[in-house]
Image (cartoon, rainbow, N blue to C red; front, side, top):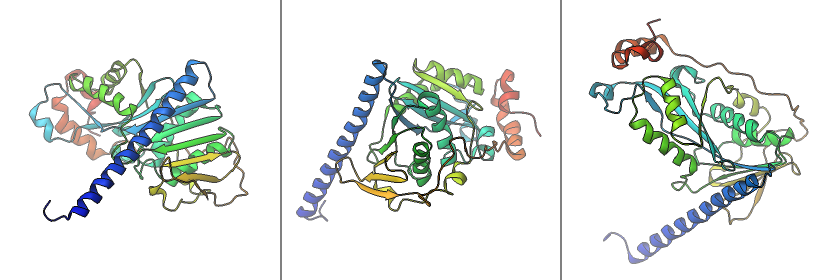
Length: 322
C-alpha cells in the first residue's frame, strides 16, 4: 500500500469497478438468453435454442466415499466430464469419456476442438437440427472453445443451411460460471458420497444427480476430424481473444460480426479462404476412432490400482494384462 501513490490507488479502484460492471452486463446478456429460450419453449416455439457448454474436472475410478490412503498417490482411471445444457428445456447432457474412448491414447486429446465440436454438434443435431436460429455461451478457453475452428464450425452450419443465424458469446474471464457448472456441482455432491468402481456406476451417479441431468456414453456420438476439415476452408480471425461476441448469418455468408463486449461497436471480418466455395450439405469430416489404452497403462492399472477395486468390478475397471 505504501509503495503506491494516491492517484494509482484511485485508478486501480476505478479499473476494478469498471471490470465488475462489465462482468455484470455480460451476465445480464447470458440471463436474458436463457429467459428468452425458456419462454419460446414453454409456448411451443422451436425456432430458437440457447446452449451453454463447459468442461468439468475429470472424475476418477475407483472412488470411495471414505478414500483409501494409498489411492491418493496413484494415477487412477480418468473419466472426462463435458456438459452441454439446452437452456430452453433445462436439460443438461453430460458426456462421460473413459480413458480408452478419447481421440488420443490413454485419455489424451479430449479437450481440443475435435472433441468439443463433435460433442456440441451431437447435441445441436439432436435438439435443434433444423431450427432457424441458435445462440451459445462458453468460457474463454482458446484451446477448447475460442478458436477459429469453432467459428468455422458455426459458419459451416450456416453455409449448409442448417441455421439462418448463430450467435456465439463469452462472459468476462473470471466471471464465466454458468448453469452447466451448477449441474456439475450436483454430480460432484453425489459422487463424493457414493462408492464408484466402474463406469456403469458413474453413469447412475450422473443420471441420479438431477432430474434434468442425462448421461451420454460413447459411442452415442462420433468423433470427427473437424480441425482437418475446417482449416481447409476457413482462416484464423486476428485478435480473436479480445472479442466476446460473434455472429454469423445467412444474409452475409462467410462474414463474422464481432464485438469486444455487449456495448462495444461491431466489426465485420471474413473467415472464408475462398468466398466462392459452396459446401455440400452431406459432406462431413472424417470419422476418428478412439486411441484406446496403451499396454503400459493397462499394466499399471492391473498391478497398482486393481487391488483397490471391489472384485466384481475388477475386470471392467482394471482389465487383465495385455
